[in-house]
Length: 150
Length: 179
Image (cartoon, rainbow over all chains, first blue to last red; front, side, top):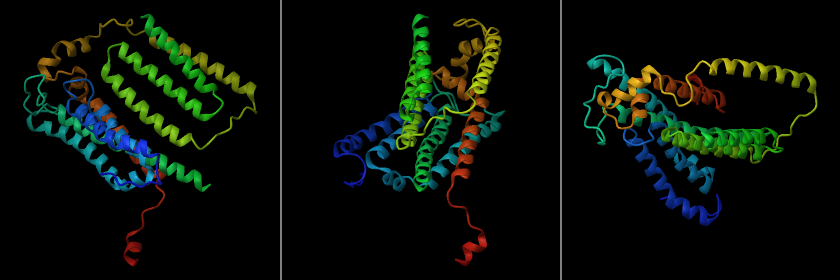
């Protein structure tokens, strides 16, 4: 549950709506990522939707909330894990042939577990995009801090 | 075809307004309008993957830009060597238009799918990859090298900005031990 601090952020109406909506936005982002090989979307779009759910928290509850929830070290780790995971999936293709081979069994199309490595690659890209989106927020916070000091 | 032309005109008008706006916030809003126009253009051209990505990235960039510009009002510099600046702008505009015309006149006509490799992807994509979404299959299987390069670019950009914008430097090992 999101900790409530009456003085920070927007009014109580915005906070209540944001508290309800954040979970749904997060869930929709995860759906877009996991169904990237069946329906339109994929890792890039879904990752940014997941990041937007955190931005909703930032807009409603103030900057301290997001800085407390997701420290910058977590974002760095997420980004590195996404990039290395994508490369690792590609390298595992050598186990049965060549770089970027589809080494997992390909199921029947239009099923959730199909298309070999594509769902895992989507998840890896989504991790990268989530961290990039959150990193953008941190960049703005740092920039605003700089401009206030001057 | 007519709706795409209308949307293109809409995007161009929004871009002109963004350049000519007097304060920074209205320029940011006009940039967002042109991005939404691009999103609807993708939808009309039946590319929902691109439309979703464009919409989401546009919202994210708009939020970051609004957050960065809402408290500042940068003045426009109108003084200076306006004659030289206008001359250089016109020369570069003509050069870019000429080069762009030369480049675009070489590619196939709009909506004319004659590319050989792409037609192979469309015909054999479902049997080879077993992915229902062909865009995903091309992105992550046929052209996975491109996606790897893209991910590398994003990663390197984030690492570079993180290194430049970091406010506290890392301490040396001896200093950490003495503390």
